[in-house]
Image (tube, rainbow, N blue to C red; front, side, top):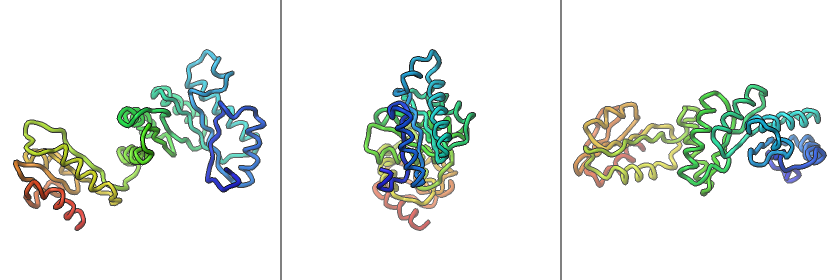
Amino acid sequence: CIENGIDALRINPGNIGKRENVEKVVKLAKTNQTPIRIGINGGSLEKKLQELDIPLEEKMLKSAMGHIQILEDLDFDLIKVSLKSSDVQTTIKAYRLIAEKTDYPLHLGVTEAGTLKMGLIKSSIGLGSLLFDGIGDTIRVSLTENPLEEVEAGWGILKSPGLRTRGVNFVSCPTCGRTKIDLIGLAEKVEKALANYDKPIKVAVMGCVVNGPGEAKEADIGIAGGDGCGIIFKKGEIIKTIPEEDIVKELIKEIEKM
């Protein structure tokens, strides 16, 4: 992989084997200036560490620091580190521990997080907690799903705490007794229509005209459903009323003007 020009690589201390195997990789990585991620996985630690009677996150830390030392002994410092577990709490604890020990870039992730719904929840909790602590330089959302979903989820996680602004920040309210429109279907249509927009705008889809514009006044633009109709508003100010069947089309038109 290195000889064929890969941008970076990952070694797993738990399965790369003897130190001499690491030395072979590092020797060529030095020649090609290829960064190495020391990728610790809580489920595949070195056998000697698995047998220690200490918490898993401490075992993971020992593994990471041991292999950092090996690479530094070999005069190699193009290093990034990850300490992933399928358990969210263990992952958070492990990264907090290593953040106190080293300044090398940290690659965040909850490994084997699961299918789309549960994997999103685990990844959002795990990565979000660390990002708000100021920990982490790159991320991976691990889902048993199309990798495109992982990328979408990653952008969403980065946009929520304001670390990235690319693309639409989409907000919508839950349904309630005032809703007179197919709010779920409408929200899905709008989200799909705006999926490829790179412009950093905030778009709201609200269920009623009573509270919608006011509750979403921070949005750059939004729509609120009525009884067979809807309104479009900007920064909380209503700009037009339109038939229900034209809501999405008219919203897109207004966004294009912006």
